[in-house]
Image (cartoon, rainbow, N blue to C red; front, side):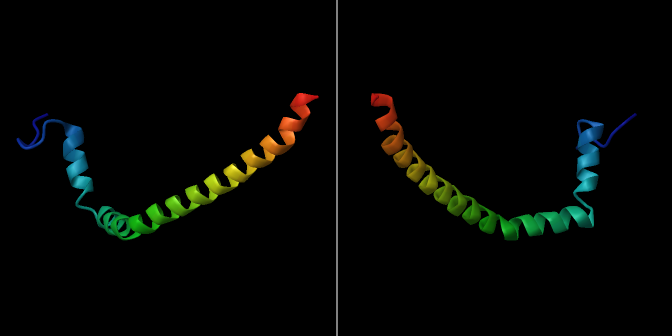
Length: 70
């Protein structure tokens, strides 16, 4: 089966055809718009988890250290 010269494989030709669909274009636009919100949420959530992890470590050190000495 002969493919267009700009494509090296059938899969690349299929990918190019999929990029022309409305769904791909909608996904691309939505991803571009929402990416900053996802990135900020990830940063804030990670900071919250690190904060509570630090509290947990301090509490474990304070209460865990006294049991290890006995």
